[in-house]
Image 1 (cartoon, helix red, strand yellow):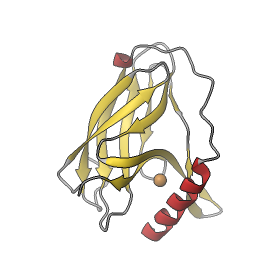
Image 2 (cartoon, rainbow, N blue to C red):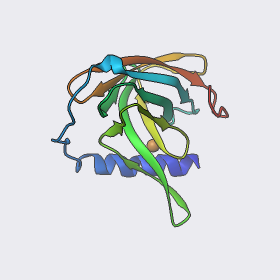
Image 3 (cartoon, helix red, strand yellow):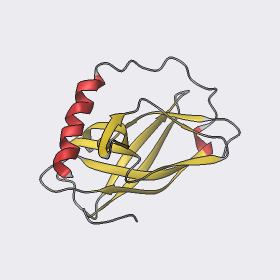
Image 4 (tube, rainbow, N blue to C red):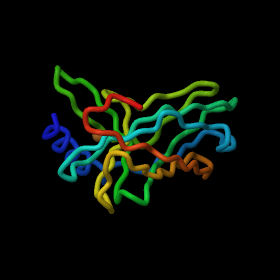
Length: 155
Ligand SMILES: [Cu+2]
């Protein structure tokens, strides 16, 4: 599972250069209309890439488009989606994620997640990792993600 994850990560790196920035963006509502709940990271040993999960809630009347995520603790943060293809679990890079009006999107194992690699410090369970979520229109939401052990299934 872990080796496969690493392999898929390499594949995602290979794809990264091909993905252009998305030119179209929905009308921006204030970032305060978006909340992040249950933000956590599944830590993995041996400096392997970790996955970040959360529920993003949009209380506004318009779609909120997540266009990028960064963290001072990781050199690279990508938005990924895991999916089953012919019984094989693979990951693909996603360049944005729309949070529907008065709705939410859950980043969870087996689906959307943040792929965290190139750690800039020895991140370990019990830590908090600040994450900056950027939305179309330029608003930024900073959220602390709780780092949980490899066998955790959620906060
Ligand atoms: Cu991934």
